[in-house]
Image (cartoon, rainbow, N blue to C red; front, side, top):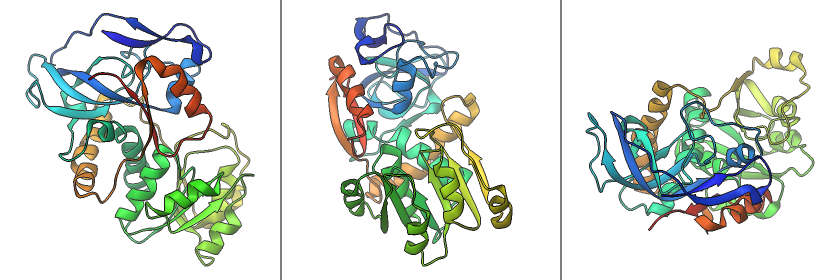
Length: 328
């Protein structure tokens, strides 16, 4: 089968399309013919040698999410049959024509959702739902702050919050992305090119502050998050694009009784990944089927243009998801 392989740690030029062996199908697993794969910042970090694949995942083939068709089922696997349309998360290897996954980590693709749309869902929506609802206990009617609102996880997060009837404030480096987020239900947008946003968030919430923060940026943003928080707020820290360290006023953390919650999906044990897949199937897919939320696809690149897809992702120009077209 064809796969995008990281020749060695480095720039986009180290991505090569090669013929590699198709994976066997272990007991309890299914093999999926991949049609589309999502491109994520974790893939860029893996290519640079800064985010190695966890044990059991292909060490040199990136890709964390996919949509495709079941090709074969291993012994004891009964949830799916060949020909079923599915989507889901994997710890790596989705930039390939075939992947294997435990059948309980795989979800049926909702009717009415194309393969392209389905591939734009798993990483963005599961990450957002897990951070906001499972970890930060977001309740209907609360006030939510979503950073990098125009990103894949950002567009998913603001839609998850809106589906729960929440008031959503979003930040972005550019006003254009905030304007586009209005179409997804964003209530208030704050352009934050210099990383300062707390005062504007407080204005947008009439001085009340926010109850939950979906922080995809990290670094100095966390200190601003604290300033923008209401009493007993929860900050779900998912990304570190602004850096891995922050200086916080711990007095404010104590006074407001704010919870700072760190979360990551890729390195979780199997049982937690199965729980994430169940959230995708049981909680997110019904919203997708009713179009209460929708995937946002920015651009689709051919598998042979994986390097160009990485360059585009790194440019921060995308709004929503960047995908690779893998198979027919």
